[in-house]
Length: 281
Image (tube, rainbow, N blue to C red; front, side, top):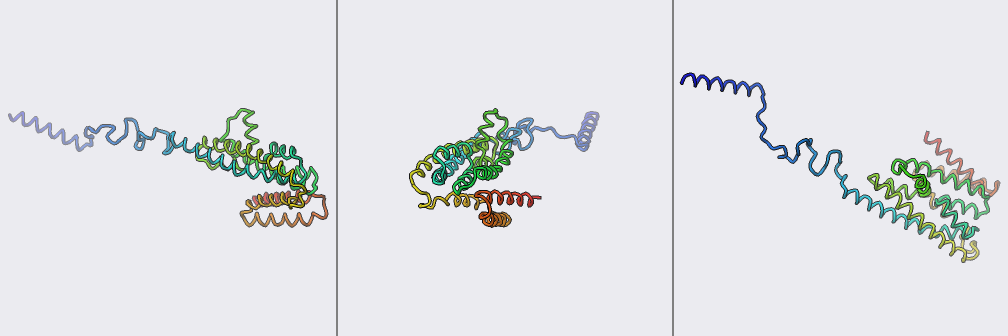
């Protein structure tokens, strides 16, 4: 009897010393009692697979693509409708219907087209019209650099089509989207819808412009320049930009009596670009 009590006492002392040494108690809690399956780290709940961030679900991606598609088509309708004014103004300024349609289909950039038509309407040389419109279109190079990570890889033919559709509107819609796939949808929906509607409304405007008679009687000889100024105004958001535009305008007026039509605008544009580049340094 005394030996049994002595044995139990030694066993109790061994058990207490084991607890004091820090041996962990047996874990009888099921692995998934807190919603974490075996192997998951805290936070990897069943709704989020490892590597996903909250919101990256198929439903969210579908909604993002749908929103991008709607935005692209909406901006296509709004911008395309503006093409009717270009068609009418270009024909009233002296271009034929088919020259006007070709200009929209091939150049396809509103500001450059209005600049070309306005210089042509006042008797400027073709070289001045082409050079000025080209300078205005150089901003699309930076658009291409911004969109390349989203659109690559592309087949050479697809790349050529994308280059033609890289304009202010398609770039703005694409870059406003939250995911890469929705940016693709925004770019293509915006670019294609603007291209189709811009050219369709250009033709409608050109057909209407060919029937209005003398453009001077309606004041349309100056309307192209006025429309171009309207496009320019939205970009004058800072005092520096406004002062640069004012300087270019004064310089153009000063050189107009001295140089052939179109050349004063070209010189003023070159100086404005140089000022802009200098201010960035």
